[in-house]
Image 1 (cartoon, rainbow, N blue to C red):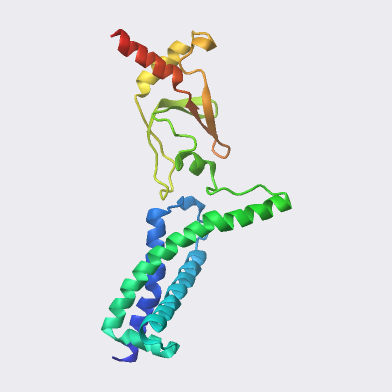
Image 2: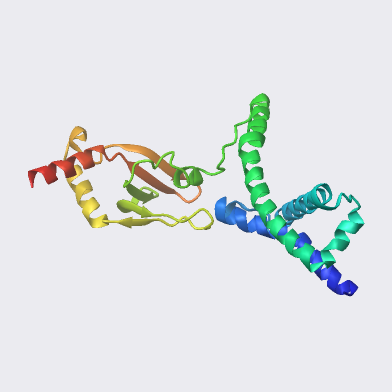
Length: 239
């Protein structure tokens, strides 16, 4: 096997764990694309390189400790010219990539975040959460949307754009903030009736949270559903 082919094989071996880890994170721990300000990808590339180095040298430790008892790094790199060892390494690297990716994610959430927030409190700064935007806090956790379905009102600069049941919203990896509403005309009828009723009789009198997009002037109001559910249940019983 000539030098060029050896170089290609080693490049693949080196890149594989980092690339696989990136795919795992995108599927299991997705993040909003608009949060990524590293336009040239240098930060992400650096993370992949560091991750690949960790997996590569973990392979050296496993090989030396369990198989060959040879800690010579040159012999380790030479082993990749063996098809059998290359296959074994790919299987090992795949397993290690899954394990390390999940461990690093746990480390980031449960250890690094605690250390960073203790430092922030010491410096008098706001603490960080697992999610860096309010949009993610609302739509990517069950913290505020535990009870579904929920009626929302979308407004911009004081004007109502639409009201209805919140049907769908984009997954975490999507850069858009689109919302899909249903039964809008039916819900609008309830709001029209509420206009002539006193506050205590309104179906949609209370909002439990309101999301403000200060930059674009949008407001999303999430309405308390208790009176609506009571009304629908009473209608079912009477029928």
